[in-house]
Image (cartoon, rainbow, N blue to C red; front, side, top):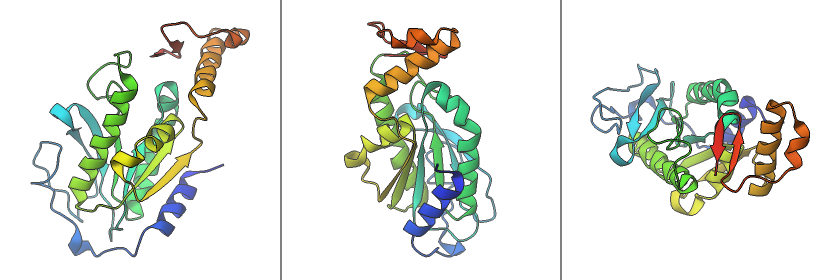
Length: 219
């Protein structure tokens, strides 16, 4: 199975030779976060802030440590309970990639995490896809580098794959992608049934208004 080390190794092979520290940008003027905060080679701390339409999306930018590689990395997280379960690993992956010289952005889709909106709002899939567009644009604006790899975990891989034409990534890394909507829905039903202590209920049809799973309502 794939691991953080695997992802780092894959991206290292895909990226070109690192550029020098002098090519880092001072982001005090160009950062989309709406705050004057310089991110230089001497400051490797992650920078949290809001971006996108009306600054409605939340993200954390991890500046590269040492010589910067010529490949941005956009992390497309899974959804719902899987996002909660993988949060620590996702954060560690971002830090590990940044330590390897990659500029990294991890973000919350609209209606999730610290971003505006609610998970049960209508039009969620379109909102999540547009979130990826905005995140890719923000990361490219931060670094001034066009080349971008999208790393998607579970449903994040599906969403990333659906946005290839719009984002035009240089590379895609799919980490245990969810294999189709019907199968993903069945997995949600099984998780919800297991949480209720009735795994046999996973074989029942989903309700017409969606699936309730681990506190998240999917429509």
